[in-house]
Length: 203
Image 1: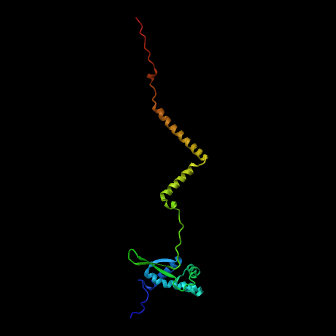
Image 2: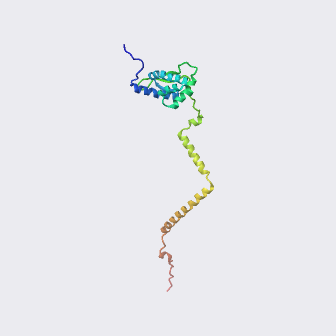
Image 3: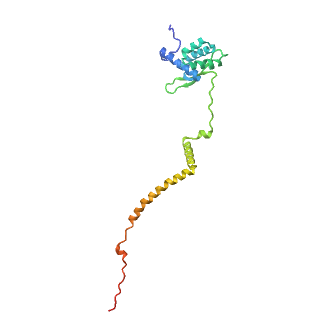
């Protein structure tokens, strides 16, 4: 007859298995809901219900016993002050397992382990117009806002811009003037002399 066969080993040694349970208990108390495999959830539920029962007692000794599984004092405080008082009139059965089906990849059966009074927090609803806006539409709005701000600039800023632009025009004109002079060729001296027809006298 095989003795000491109770409990699932979960493919881990004792130290690794207990460390995993401590981490799962901390996550369960912090978020009041975790997603894990069915085998782990079935092994974790008795441990979680025991620490909730200790939380209902509320003694210093109970806090020390819970501290063995959860070293974080903030989580221990949350367990004793928030979670345990909710089950003051409930004689056990604080958690439930909701199966989710097989996991893609290895086919392991998944489940949700949560407190029986757990309720999902509703997220603040956003208007449909804001929710439908994409990244490109937001960028367009930012550009239009920038253009409108530039259009509403003070007249002093416009004057300074026009003053800065005038010297550039002068320099451009001064550079273009020599080219025009160079293109105009000087007139030849023969062109200046006007030839007058000589009158031939009668002999």
